[in-house]
Length: 295
Image (cartoon, rainbow, N blue to C red; front, top):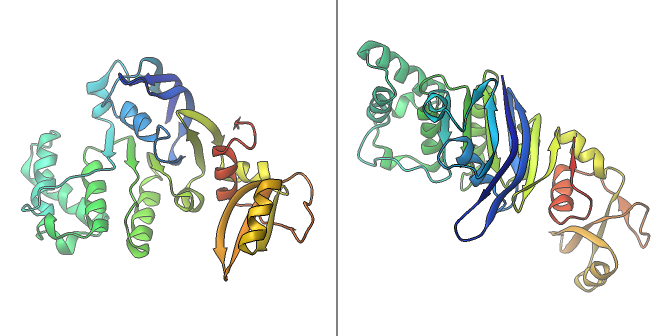
C-alpha cells in the first residue's frame, strides 16, 4: 500500500499559502511529519483526511483518488485530530459502540466484539465503563486511537498526539502507534523530534508549507554528520560565538551553555565534533543553513 501526494497547493482566503507544491510518497509503516507550529502540518493532514480541499495537486492511495472520491476515502481512513473532544458523561464503551454504529457496524454482536477488542488493544478494558470526562490526557488519546481504528482503516492520521502527555503515557501511546503501523500507513504529525527519531522509518520535515527533507531519519542525519561541532561556554562567550558561527542550537548544560554549530571543518577554540542527531538536522533545515534536500 502506498500514499502518493503530488504537487499539492493550498492558499487560505487570508492569503496564507499553507501548502507549497508538496510531494511525498508514504509506504506502509509509521511516517513522521516534523515541523514547527504553523509549518503546514495540520493543513496537510486535513487535506489528506478530506476535511478541506486543495487548490491543486493530487493524492492517491494506490489507485484510489482521494481528492475526487471523498466518501470512499473516509471508509479507509482513521483520524485523530490535534483537538479531540469527547462527551464527558459517556463511558468509553458506550461511545465506541455508538461510533461503530455510525460507521455501519449494525450487527449488535459484531459491534460488541469489536468494541471489546479495541478497548483491549488500547489498554482501556479496565476503565471501559468510566466516564470519559474522568480520563487522563493519555487515556483520552488512546480512546482517540480506538475510535480511529473502527472500520479497519488503511490510513491512520494522528496530529500532535503526544503534546501534554507525561513520559509514561507518551511511551505507552507511541508503542501503540508502532504496533498499529505494522499493518497500515500511520502518519504522525508532530513538532517533537524524539517522537520521530525513536519510531519512524520514513519522515519529512516541512516548514512554511514546503518540504525541506524527505527520506529515512538516518539519511537526514548523514547530511550533517561530521559537520556539527559542540562547545560548552559561558553566557558572554556564547554570545560572541553566535556572531562568528552558524549556531544550530543552544541549551543549558551543568550551568553553562552548550552550543552546536555547523561547519565543514573544526572551528577551533575548544570545539569538538558532535555525534549529530535528528534534532541537529531539524534546526539546520528549518533555519535554511543548508539547501532543502529530498532523498
